[in-house]
Amino acid sequence: MFSDLGLAEPVLQALKDEDYVSPTPIQAQSIPVTMEGRDLLGIAQTGTGKTAAFALPILNHLINNPKALTPKAARILVLAPTRELAVQIADGFKAYGRHVKFRGALLLGGVGQGPQVSKLAGGVDVLVATPGRLLDLFGQGHLRLAQTEIVVLDEADRMLDMGFIVPVRKIVAALPKNRQTLFFSATMPPEVEKLARDILHNPAKVEVTPPATTVERIDQKLFYVEQPHKPALLTEILQDPSMNRVIVFTRTKHGANKVVETLEKAGIEASAIHGNKSQNARQAALNGFKAGKLRVLVATDIASRGIDVDNVTHVVNYELPDVADTYVHRIGRTARAGATGIALSFCAVDERALLKDIEKLTRLSLDLIHDHRYVSDVPANAPVRNDQRPQRGKPQQRGRGGSSDRRQGHGGRRAA
Image (cartoon, rainbow, N blue to C red; front, side, top):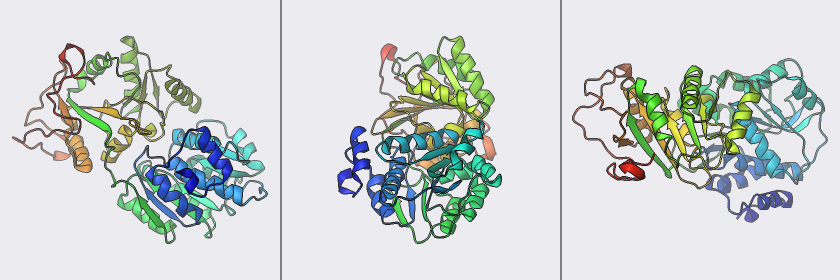
């Protein structure tokens, strides 16, 4: 129970307003440690409740340690790799802190800096920021970090993927040595592990799931399909009415736009979010998706960890990601908050090496679907990326979710 964790009454009231009663494992283990003032290394998959795991004890800290704000300074700094995730975190602080008097600010690119500079002028309690915009304003003298008490690095492995490790190190170097640092990551590649060692002091380690394992509640399925047939296959499977809130992932911005065009020609309303879209356009698309006005959201990997929407029924990997870890984060957009979900992956011949990397990382062979007219059998001698050859004669292993012979839905087709 949250009431057993020693949180202040205003925080407990906000949790009651949200109908939250029991903490998730990452919250139950992280909150007491954070309230003791210790550094924390938290390893947990996306969708496990990490935002509340650090936001609740931080709000508790602000209640128990009131201070006058210093111009251009931030008492708490939360770094996030993407604009979408930064917005999600800021929204979390607003929800959990609705009965707490605190001043917050959000710094992100893609919008004018004027209002952000104005917000910083009087100082803030909680600053949520992406590294690029934060360094810009810090370099211009609009922000001081010497008095920051707590810093949170969220999705540290995504920081690495997006090339933010050097900017993060610059930001950390500007922070006081006498601070509390909370470090969260879904996976721990060597460079992220080194960063954690360098910036954490005698941290408590909380690991609620093994690194890089996929969420148990996600039914993961695979289509072998040639690249030219992917648009038709996607259009066909979206005829299934059970696919009522779907995120489709592509590797490129151009690819995302093409998928939206294909779907709209088929009468399926869709919108894309990627780096070339303005922040306002991205947020408008995300808001429409959250509100149920938009059935299909097409996204590049810049958004794979920044979309926190309940009741996403399906994730479609229209193109397999170049980095296997990204697969875990993509499919984690479904099966959130205790729900179940389905992840569908399209694999062309030249993506076989990427599939092999994913199955090696997740220790799971995806459940093959072969009963749609656009799917194909991949020849044993088909070329693959990185000179990795498919194993010949090895029977297809089945993933979670049962035998591939099981049929669901109308017309004898497996429900997607």
